[in-house]
Amino acid sequence: MAKKRFLILFLFALAQAQGDNGTPTLDPDVIQRGSFTDGSGSIGADAVQALSATSQNNFINFCKGQTLTDGLQHTDGSCNGIVMGQIPAKNNMVSVVITNPQNGDSIDSGQNFDITLQVSNLDAGSFTNAAATYYAAPQQLKGGKIVGHVHITVQDTGSNLNPTEPLDPTKFVFFKGINDAGNGRGRLTAAVEGGLPAGNYRLCTLTSAANHQPVIMPVAQRGSQDDCVRFTVTGNGNTINPAANNGEKGQAAADLVAEAVRLGPGAPDPGGNNGGGGNNGGGGNNGGNNGGGGNNNNGGGGNNNNNNNDDDGEGEGTPTETASNEAPEETPRAGNGGARGNGKGKGKRGADRLARLSRRRRFVS
Image 1 (cartoon, rainbow, N blue to C red):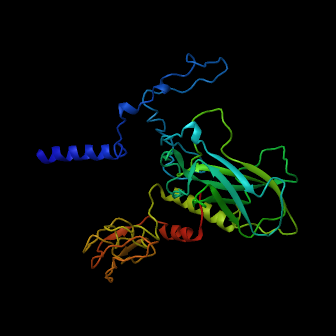
Image 2 (tube, rainbow, N blue to C red):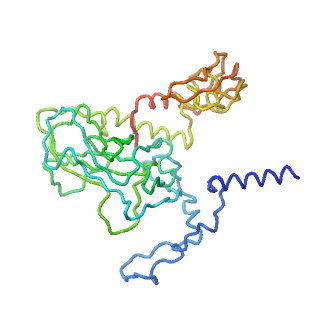
Image 3 (cartoon, rainbow, N blue to C red):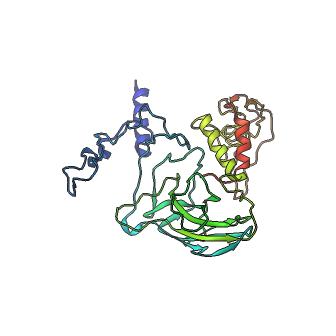
């Protein structure tokens, strides 16, 4: 009885320390009373306004019975139950300006060039795994600024720079998520290696929180957080850029996220942690298990570098030399591994294919 009581108290304390992220219970202190009303009888009401949906429990079960987003990029649509998160103050709203190319510029076809931006009020360089954690966590602030990154997308506008029909959002000639902090003072750069075919183009930014959701601002009346410019590419070049939707990298990225959806949420990386190819850097993680499901006889709580892949995603650990405690600064530290991992990890079917896709793609967002 005493043990059970201790366990309950421990779990409660742990949940409190984690901000209750580990419990499915809605804390009454976070219920938003603004959702109690549809707005029709509230300040600012107007007869032509749409009525808001209402909830007494923060819409906690809004997605019940629907396909859950689950951190995946569902091309057939889904429902995401993750809260929007932290919202910055009005004086910390994000703003982006494209500094190169400029509106009306002309660039030679097939020529390498840099897209450069200047961003304010964004803690840039935070870019989560878009194949597994898409929209999977709330927007967060650091020092009052949104933690996130900026995407670049370039689309063909057709025969001129001023089309009269909306562009197809599934088609782009270049796309990249900028996953670094740039110069640390708001300047971000994306290299367009190989250039673009001759044509007319619209370049836009898509500013996102760390988990790729569009940034959320505190007030409705504001300037746009993103920027667009239009430019031309001249010459005889017609080579598709690899980062186009029909380019090598673009297709590899689409294949990877499609495979992630097929495997389901939380599918292990077959080439890295628990997936059948490598070890977790940090100590105490699985080394002999290829599917993340077996057991290790760890000699020191560290990682065993003893993974062998089978074609079906299952494998057995084999003896290996003890890993050193020393590691280069840019790599995770590895603890001392035990003699042998004896468990059989049961990786999901298709893990080898996912590994190949992981190696092929260099960006996904």
